[in-house]
Image 1: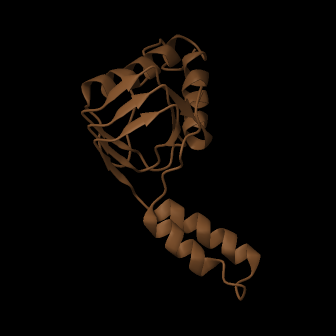
Image 2: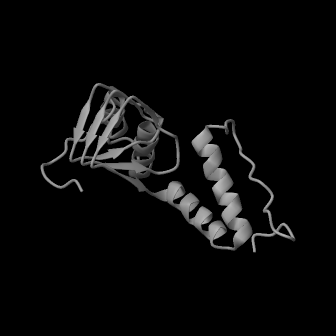
Image 3: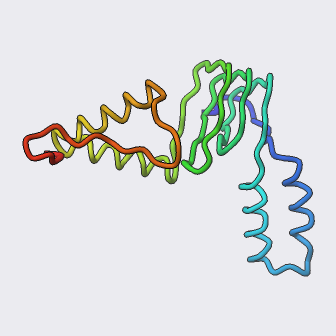
Length: 151
């Protein structure tokens, strides 16, 4: 996916302006690449009433309000969490990369470590379902096994 058509890449306007400045011949190429990368990462886009079709949409820190995603790949790298409000998802999938994918591997390893690991991961997902976690860190339960281990 994207299955058909060519998607147009939506970029922050600030990116184009900063890119033009950053590619001046006076700047070394290493600095230019770093500067472009930083400018993209610091840009947050706010999308409202947009329709995304057959696109690979980078979610990182962006805000989506009343948008429609049709047959899209929604890519989350685990850096800055996107915000979703009143959106519609039709035939779209989430794609996890980088830190997000490593977090999924971590949870899978805990889950398959044993009975205690299953409880830890299930409690984590219960907190997600209930919206009962917030802040900069979240603690899990102590595994409910005879020796409080994951086994």
